[in-house]
Image (cartoon, rainbow, N blue to C red):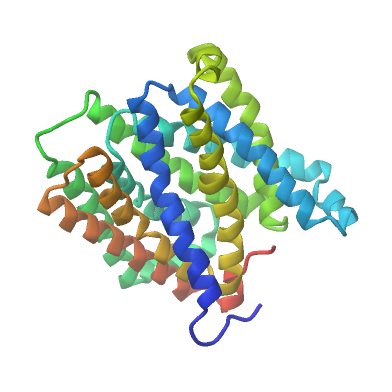
Length: 319
């Protein structure tokens, strides 16, 4: 793969739309808390709708090459997808659950610590990445993320939601799940089209989410919610899950992993601004400063990873 020279207008536009989409996601999940839709029910309905959309996109993509799709959907693919499915399930649950205890801006800022977890955990699995331990840039990034995460938590405003400490704990679990999910995909499904493995992993997740909804939620009552809630379910499944993932893989192919993930770090600040207008969430000046330190540290860590990559081609993603 070769990266485009100059300014990539199509790639940049799609990346900007993904930033907006994934920034709105936490706002919508927190809105469900406000209108008494349980985490279990909103997860089951949104993810089921998104799953149908994703398989439709996969079918359209391979409409002239179903033989290639059939080879990718091998028995091994289905078996290996069970491994990243576990952290993916944890990611989906804790993302929604945390927003029932803390507001979107705080959650989004704290979640960016996942970069550090991903790098540290990868070192245990891939020995070559332990060369990062010799990188001053890595240690600077690690230190900044830790200081920023502590600051974002410690400099909270006095206004609190009930169970805030538990919500912060859930964000830590969310960050670990995000890291484990990425590692699992890289380790076991790296030779599969990213859109295909996402569809397979989601296929495993949805029955579990529905089981949790039946056990702990009230899907029958949620099904009878008004047209506004159903419109949000459908729009969120389309614009917060299905289309952004398709665009994410396409942008990575054009612009590379590092550039894409660096720009997506900005979702934390966009979400915080949106949450201020939507829910009057107010972050203190020191929280904003700490958030900037945290996100900057995560970006520095991303850049330090490039020091151990033998060539830019390692950042490619098969589509």
